[in-house]
Image 1 (tube, rainbow, N blue to C red):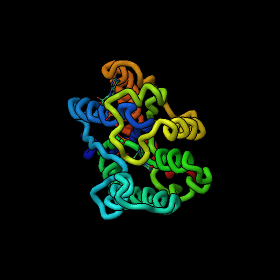
Image 2 (image 1 turned 60 degrees about the vertical axis):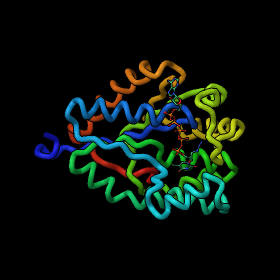
Image 3 (image 1 turned 30 degrees about the vertical axis):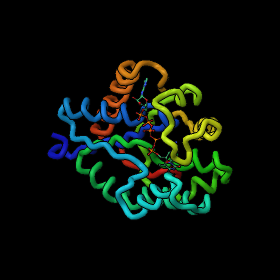
Image 4 (image 1 turned 90 degrees about the vertical axis):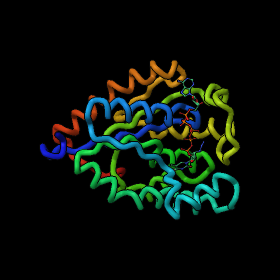
Length: 212
Ligand code: Z5A
């Protein structure tokens, strides 16, 4: 039992373009880890349930207009308002599978033209993921899936720029998976990586902060 042994949960983030399969894979990973008896929750950003989250949701649905910098800071605030809960869950042994995080924040805002370093600044001090899983898919291929729903960023040209921004964020600690493979094949690869990460965290890997 994780709680009794005092080991912590893992912070695992899924990133990728729209329609890369993040939501499908987080559900699958959740069931997988639950089935193995690990305490686990799935989270997603934006968290549209908070007051800030509702402002973000209205913006994405084109129901409100906001300056690009202002919406960037709201996305960041939406993560900051969950930081302490996130930390206490991890410390009490719960693994979190998180669908989008700070990397989405930087990738989308910088794709819109905001300065890359400016975009990173408000994310500094949030918890650093133990593992970033990048679901890699050509933007054209992602666009063929399930039809874009009409939210603000669901346009091919922007998604291409977002893919380039993700490349700038990519570092040695990330793991890229070919997300154009069948859903079960992607899942199989993710399972192995996730389990490995959960074990490393149980063994005492320290929590750290992002970009600081
Ligand atoms: N955003 C931001 O600007 N700043 C931030 O800080 C954050 C986000 C956190 C809303 O995010 C927007 O907010 C997002 C980025 C921006 N804009 N865009 N684009 P969201 O999380 O609410 O929306 P999303 O990430 O775009 O979710 P999504 O559309 O649900 O995509 P997904 O989760 O990656 O994919 P999916 O739902 O699992 O799968 C999509 C379809 O493909 C579905 O029909 C599946 O059955 C199918 N699928 C999945 N995997 C496969 C495989 N392997 N083969 C074939 N078909 C598949």
